[in-house]
Length: 378
Image (cartoon, rainbow, N blue to C red):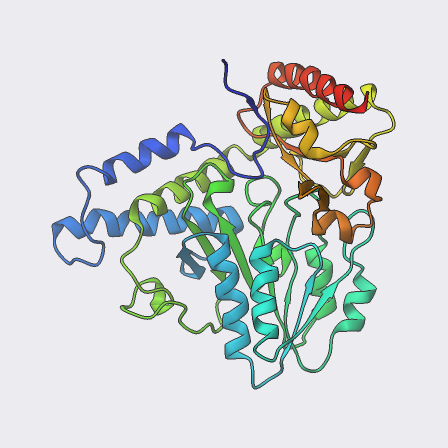
């Protein structure tokens, strides 16, 4: 049978062919250790610095402010645990949100066990942080605020520049998890006002297992991995040359083709939403109506269960906002925090389009989704 239509780009992306092409020479002739001073180390070392420049260009920072990591989860851990360690004498309070990815929530829970106080800010029914509430939660002992740029489930974009205005001149480090936003919407560290920013390669057509952490000049982080002096001494270990090059190329592609990619993602996402809402006017689209990723459609079908729909939907690859375990439906923490009614939340699916999604795929997928939902609802 034909492979399912892929509408799960927020989970991971396929590698761009241009990314693969850039990586191949470093799987063959340029195999040297970039720390080596001889001929074989020269090309890998030069390629790493070129990749660093490409990543920096995408988010508008200096190349020296980019640290390569194994992905956004490591970047988030380094940011949160690093600031907690380096700023502990100043205070022990961290502010984040109730809808963060587990790569933020779990490090926060770890830090709670180490004596830190964590405030998980609530969100409104669109998934946006209440700025007045955030300002009221800031204390003299607050050392870090971490708010994701865009939510992975519903796509809502947070007002980071407004949060930076609230922080003002306070001695508080500002971090964002930009795994879902980079390459989809403008992600400029200077405009956003962040001190630390996490990236994931596999969300923007680079390999899995590579990411980056932006560390604004002047922000002090302790070593995350001890050993030799790679990555400014912050992350020891021989560099993952092949995947670093892939990430760099992916960031270059994202910057060069930003407008076209944005329009295609939004066009195909909007078409899918239109078709599904025509068929099911009682359905509910989750997330902010305007401040939202161009590719993300979280839609709830009342009277259904997500896992049942997905079970009928062999022809489309998507994600559910709820799962059934031992006969009990468990709704995602994001939908729960947004206050989505249970009858809607348990029937929530997330579809996410990408640079390779076509109108023809959307037309076929919408027919198949409608058929699957009707078979459950009936």
